[in-house]
Length: 258
Image (cartoon, rainbow, N blue to C red; front, side):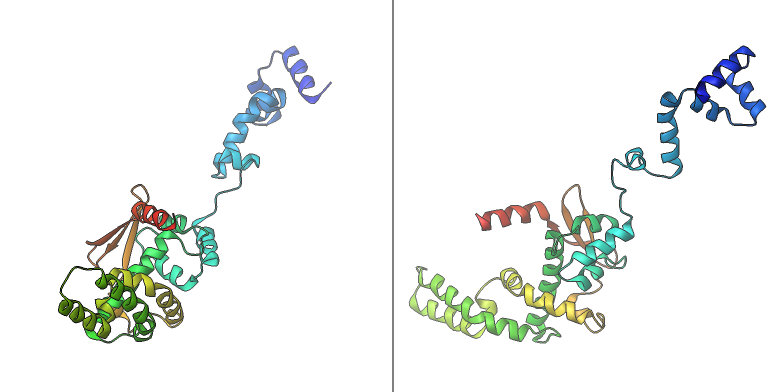
């Protein structure tokens, strides 16, 4: 006979319930239940054990991998980043209102859609500051000098197609020849210089952002709304300065690729 059979036969001969037998043996009645009916009790026991360890039943069974902690997700997303220092800055509690959501949003992409737009926002802030003051801690002089010829050539082609007086065309071209900002919108120029800007910001974060407060309009605070797929840029009082709809950005990227 098995142990379960021995217990059942002898317990019932003496007219003892499982509870009575458990007390005589100084054992918990749950153990006697499990010995006598292991298959029926096992599911309940597994659930109790999983709950005690604060994990999902499927993880306890080994059917699923345990969910990573926030610290583990944070370390993984930083390790995967193309710009790890920028990503660490964007995920810091002082910068991000909901870093646990943001870590998931960035995931293991080298540069996620959300991250690209946040870097672009910083680049645009710095570019506006340069445009207004003719001064920057970033190398916008160098970026824009390289870009100017290409943008001017395209602008010249656009002007040639316009049905306007020749004198007006020449005046517009003279302005564009002397200023890159007359060749295209600030938004488009910011997009074109975001790559070298990100490389330079990554290097500057080696020593921190001291001295860059005006360039980047610091403090830079943001939050993500996963349900609306939207980023919000906030001021120091928590008021919304701007919103970035990521679904709209995704759709625009699809159109550009098609």
